[in-house]
Length: 149
Image (spheres, rainbow, N blue to C red):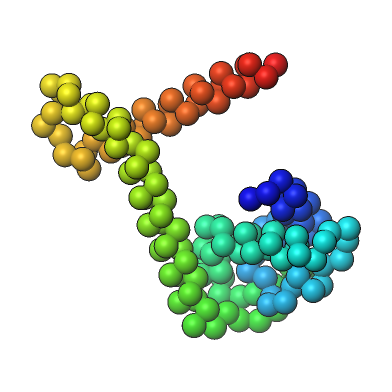
């Protein structure tokens, strides 16, 4: 996501806290209603990213209603749309699992060399490896922040 699109999405969430800020399912064509200093193409890209987030899709499935920018209900979500939202959510979850598995595979291989982990299955090792991976990321992030100061 480019910095301009990310900044625009942040600004849209602030400008429309009752809808975009709450990740409510938006009325179709809402990009045409947005007024402000933003380029229409950037608005479309920002909303495209926004409408594919996990929280947006979960809200759409749970609420089954679309909303105007002011947060008032605009109409129902069709069964066909709900089906698409379920598919998109499943796809995101699947991609996340694959990505996470790739990230921890080297850690699992290294763990297998130790006696205490040798007997465990990949499913049993994954949570341990995931914690190690997340811990490593946090250390790297903290070191980077410290270096920038």
